[in-house]
Structure formats: structure tokens, C-alpha cells
Length: 550
Image 1 (cartoon, one colour):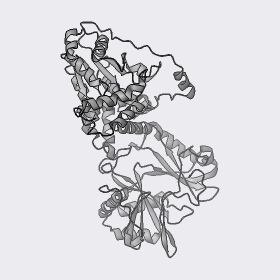
Image 2 (cartoon, one colour; image 1 turned 90 degrees about the horizontal axis):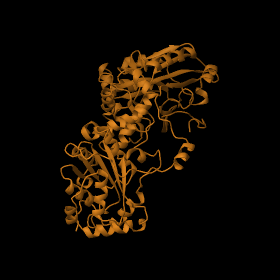
Image 3 (cartoon, helix red, strand yellow; image 1 turned 135 degrees about the horizontal axis):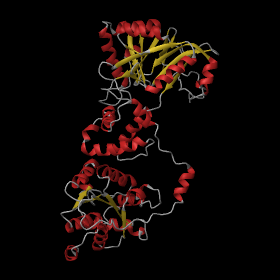
Image 4 (cartoon, helix red, strand yellow; image 1 turned 30 degrees about the vertical axis):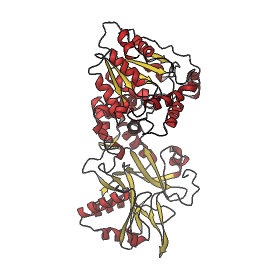
């Protein structure tokens, strides 16, 4: 929208008055939308060289959320980009109540206003009068890790409102005060100041920007980049652009997205090699130290988790981190995808070829089916046969997914093989189990037990599932006719979503399973137990097996 520049104003954050007071039409005015170097035609180095002039004010790009403050009828009006926290009587506008019980960005910004003003013995009225008499909007960055974390860390003493601009309350053109004057206002009212330098030429701007890019810092402080103010030689008005450092900050953002995906039971394909390591590490921490992620969904603990990962992997120097961020995973092209579609199929081993004496190699067994097709019966029968060596963890016995995953791994403390009993009908379920297991037992073995849900008897799969749900009645922990009246629809949904093992060479499944057996829907429990025991190379007690499954 902003790139096309077809709007009457490029202002990003603009609040107009329904009933203008005197000459004042605009309540609050943010900057004109500005873009990153090389993001648009007007931010290409050549354009900036030819169409702008100095002085070039380079201010450090703080990392938080934007807050606008102005004065109106003697009162302060505080806003984020989208919502006001304004006194109703002064503006006639309705404050945004936000989410019940949650402090909005505008409300948190207003709390910090009081803290800063108190440090200089100023009052709200003093600030409101100053802003109203000058008919300007003060533009801040709210940086408060106790409230909301972003990418850069703000320790205590560095948190609060950073004043980085003061704009005239008019629609067009943008009139913004110079950095010297802005810094004086910040000092007067106790706000945090944004560091800046003034350069005479565009070449000087790029020299400093490139120097800081190498170290990721400015005056020994980590920075994400700079915001640059200059003058357009075509219009004579302020022209702004930013120089933003992509790395390692895009990699850090990917780690945040990976963590949120894992917390929501999803997986994502990483762009960075180090992100693969982070994913495995994170999956393990979710099981062993789930408290690390208690506040993650509320944008808290992000930096602590990241720093712990870097510490435990001895990646402390910025140069090392930056080097890791340059090691990316190539994105498959359409032709690559086509070649995978045409790839030959894997013939999975049906035995692990473990020696009879091998009692230490850990084995994860992953069943893949839809509800009520005999997964738990198979697991129980195997445990009855090999009690001293075989563990069985049921997903239905755990209220949370993390409890199930933790239960699987705990079994390995005493057992050689563990049966991860849940449907595992989606590839992400299989992947999270495999990654978790490999992180702890890199030399362990993984066996897939795939019910042939979409094979020759596919048309009977749902009917078989529904019938057995009805036959077992209310004895199941979760899926019963009384607890889930629409159980037939649930079974149908699982069938629709069921993802058979991907047997193409190069697929994820082809890389994680060391052996695979396929269970026919009409096979007996005895036949299934023999299949899995055969993979493990363990000798069965046939008499006990037949007696148990008569």
C-alpha cells in the first residue's frame, strides 16, 4: 500500500479530530512510512546519492514498539500505532479497552511517562502544555523487557521510553524536528535519548553503517541498524530511510517462531543450519525444563531461552553468531521438488539387525494409525512379552503433549525399547518424536509401525474404527460414545488427515526410520506382535502370546 504512494499522506500513525479545534485538524502524527535500504526505488543507494542532501542524521534504531504522545486541552494523549489511551473528556474519542486483564502498549507507555517525568520533577500538565503549545507529537520507542521482549535485550536501567522524534501535527508534508532539538526535549522531561551522529555525505553514512554491520554494535552496544533523516533535493522536505541489519536478527526471530510452533504442536522448516540444532535443543528443553517457556506466548523469556542456547553451545562471540547466520539451508526450487516427486522409493529394512547380546541400543517404536485400530493392544502385548526391556507410554494418559513426550523419554532410563502410543497420523508428530529421541540417543534406532490405513482396505478403515469405539464402550480414557458423541466424525477426520509414510528417497521419513513394518487392518494382534518382535530380533514366548490373545 505505502510502496505505491497513492495515498493522500504517507503518515503511519495518524489520528484526526472529528471536531477540529481552531486550526488544529490532527491529533497525533507519526512519521511518513519509510523503507529499508534497497527496499524501494527511493531507497536505492544510487537514488539516495542523487536525490538527497545532508546533513544526514543517523540515529540508532531502538527495538521496541512505537508510542505517540501529544497534548490536547491541557491533557496528555498517549497512543500506539493503532489504539488510543486518551482521556475521554479531552478528545471525545473512546479509549481502546484492549483485552480484558491485559495492559495495552499505550497504557504501558503512559505508565512510563509518569516515571520519566518524576525524575525531572515535571508533571503531566507540563509535558501536555509543551506539546500542545508547539502543536507537535512526540514519537517514542517503548522498550521494556518486563512488559514485552523483542529481539535486542534491554536490561534494567535501559528500559522505558526512548524519544526519537517530534513531528508537527499536520497531514502533509512531514515536518520533524532535528535530532539535537529532540535530545534537548528528552533531557528536559527525563526521557531516554537515542544516540545519533550527523554526517555530511551519503558516503559517510554508508561507511559508518558498514563498520557497525561488521560488529553488530555501535559504541559497544548491540544495534539492529540506523534510521537516517536527510532532505530530498526534489521537494525540499524531510526524507527518511533505514539501514537495517538482517543478521543475526532474522535468525533470532526464526528461533522465536520455531519455539512458538513447538509450543502449539506444530513444526516448521528452518532457514538456518543452526536453527536445526536449536530445534532439537528446544524440543529437549520443553521436556526437561518446561518452566523456561511458561511466559513465552506472552513475549517473555524469549531472550533468556536464546542466551541459554548460545551459552550451552559455546557461541558467545558476535562474530561467531554472525558466521552461523550466514550458513543457510537452500530452499528447494520447483525443479528440486519435481525431482523428489519422481524420486525412487525407499525399501525400508524390516529388521534392525541387532545382535542377540545387544541390550543397550535404545529403540523408539512409533505406531501410526487412526483411533481404535489396536495400537494400545499391540503395545500392551509387547510389554507383556518383554517387560524387563520394553516400555509403553500412552498419550491418552497425559493431559498435555509435553507430559506424553516426557513420559516416553523417562521410560528409556530403565527400558531398552519404548512404544510411543498415540495416533502419530501426521508427519509433524513423527518428526517431533524422532528429533527428541535423536537429541538424547544419536546412535539409537527408530522403528515405524504403520497401520495400512490408506491401503487396499482403506474403505473399511473408518467403519472398523467406529465399530471398535462402540464395542469398547466407556472403558477408554477419552474417545468414547458418551464423552464424544460425534466419535464417527472424529474417526473420519483422523482418516482424512492420516499421512502415510513418505517412501520417496530424500523425504524426511526416509531419513528418520531405521526400519518399518506395515500392519494390515485385518491382521490379528498375534501377527502384529510377531512383526515387531521380528524387527527387534527378540525371541517370543509363543505359548504366552497365544494365551494372552485367545
